[in-house]
Image 1 (spheres, each protein chain N blue to C red):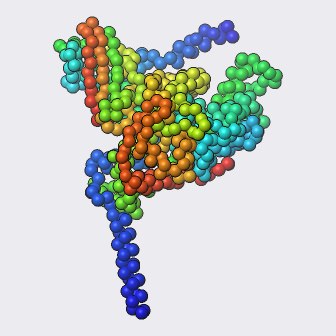
Image 2 (cartoon, rainbow over the protein chains, first blue to last red):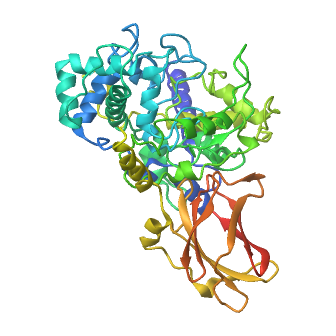
Image 3 (cartoon, rainbow over the protein chains, first blue to last red):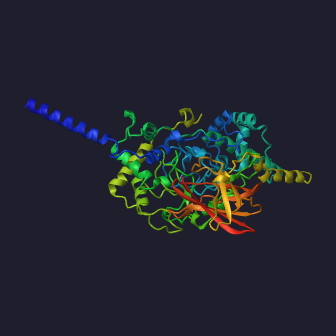
Length: 403
Length: 141
């Protein structure tokens, strides 16, 4: 009896070992040079250093970063004293909120976009209606359904809080006098607007620190040898490796989810249905118009860049295919950031993959995606690969909470 | 305020992007030896991107040098730029255009961008006294 039991245990251990070995084996065929190049183009190792933002003179100033961090978490910057940037952009949820649509003073129409790596993008919001990180930061502050403060209220908070005031004046010089009576003169209003923009620039300086950290995928890509071998501690399961092969090949995900942030920062109509009960969103077609009219865009006098090259804005395109086109989001750190899509219409990764696999006709505009015809096991493989894109933030923990 | 108005106007014009500011930069020179004939043979075009090698998702400029069939620089031409990915049936993510004439048949084309890897086609259309013609440039990114 004892002998038999020992034999059984040995047999079970051998089977488990064989199973584990099978699961750990590299892909059945090694990567081609082109495939390996594609894999490594998605790796964080390929991410260039964050470019300077000449439109924001304090973009990389330590005092601005600290001031921005305080402001980011400060609910006093809202009409009801209860909503801060961090209400929707929660550090623990990769700077999203887990809701279909963001909720500040009221529930909005759009899913909260992550801020991690956002500083690399030329466009902000799902429709790209703003073209700088600081321009973006002005918007929720004033939006009556988000934080809903007036420019003067925001500036008054800075004036009344000694820590804010000292940091602000060290960065930007004296605060403007706040208009004592309404309506303020045009000159007073302009001074308040300039100070309000400075507040947004400090918040942007903080947001520039929010960067994605290394994931299992990045370790895999970094150690991927020409023969398809990887370092022992960087192995993918066969499921994950084949998912990656689909991602860069047959499933065509890499067309839009490219580069180290797995986004091309562009706008695509992929036939996502509007949220239940909502009208279809006009998407980039409206964003193009809004960003050109925006008082805080790259052309504006509030930009600190004397050269004002503004190439993205000057050569922005229009066209019917931008109707209902939304910005490609990053695929890094998808866990905890569901639901997905511009209004949180899709709840899980499996449903998102099913959406692209079917690629039904768009109800507004034209769906750029085409049916993929992937089988269920292939969709599972893709999902396994996407789950290797989980990782910590590269940002030090001290920045991920109120100071 | 009235006294400030001229200052404001000056400031406004001072921040407008001007071709002369761009012309001062060191632009890459297209290699005439690499020039290709346009479809109808009316011109030859050589080009040099400011980003070499071209990377996806980065806006950049191209210099295109246009000559007649004999190699003489063509001045005063109107250039049009279109392009896209034939396999995906979509165009460029931007609307590039020629923004300055740099002399010797060289034209500055700004706003070039490619947002996917794969096979692209850029079409340079030339319009001048010698007639309309175009060059199709295949790119593999």
